[in-house]
Length: 489
Image (cartoon, rainbow, N blue to C red):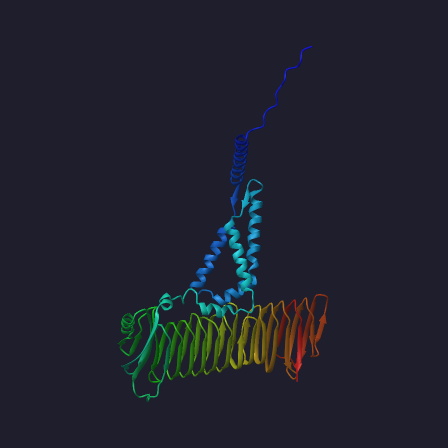
């Protein structure tokens, strides 16, 4: 028998062949990944979350830099409500996925993810309630206070005085874009019709010669037309001039300040001020007062005429007004009024409050509105505040929501009309007062110290009846809150 032929075994691949095979496997894997990515991208589209976030940030930044919204107020609001951004982004992604119906995938880019993380970080930082964001915004003054010339130049100061004769029955207009303005009657007799200006100049420069040139250019331009005298200071971010003006007390004054505080006192004529970015203080003024604020605090004391305040401002303090006090605008701080002998009216985007006379005080902040010792008719319309009216007389009307209402009335008691949603109502009346009552509490209970018909059901309570011989109607409606009638001694 023959033997079977011998088949030699296949030799193992060489090192070079093994590396070539590995390279081929890697190329094939890379080609498969690229094909998968192309297929994934072809079947997906970018979400609108990223562009919407950018548009929202741009709109808010524009409103901040143009001072249509206050920086401190915005950051306090954002620190409380920032999670709504994440909720909104999730809702948009869910709606986009449902609209795709499996035909394509919605893809959220890495930039949008980083932007969301940044917004969340800012929200957490803003929610740290011990930070005074309003003060931080004022210190940095982003958008209006960036002044590179002051940051890199050396400070140079000088003092100068200017005098100008005034015509009879003069009106003086002071325009200062950069610097404070103060106006006082001075120490000279009021019969001397002369305007005296003391200029405290400040320039920033890296050379003495350039600083001297800027000082010479920082001179007021004084022009006269009929009985109007205009003082205009040149405008430059690298140079400022604080103006201290003295002029007769009976000369009417108008002040326009760009970046700087305004202080006017001791006037026996009308005062008109316009503050773009700074605080305003007015005192001891016998004439009419008109003030327009764009940013800053406002204070007025001992005003013998009417006061008309409008614009956008932070803290407001007004006291001793012989005439009417009209406040109209946006208030981003606390408001406090005392002793307004004429009509008082405050109007903002959230609150409208008026009274015939304010013998005591009125305070308004983010959570509370209180009036003490006022004469009616009194009308308050607001929301999300606790309203307290104490020692008030005359007709009263209150409309509120998401807060409590408390009224303590004195004789003579007028008609009281209170409509409060999602909050309790408590009214205290004199024990000898005469009135009739119609009160209804939805989802609440009623209580009365007076001998009236008070009934409480499962979800409704009512009070009705007449006290004494009857008189003004006390009408109270409370939704999701209790109603209490108290009897004062």
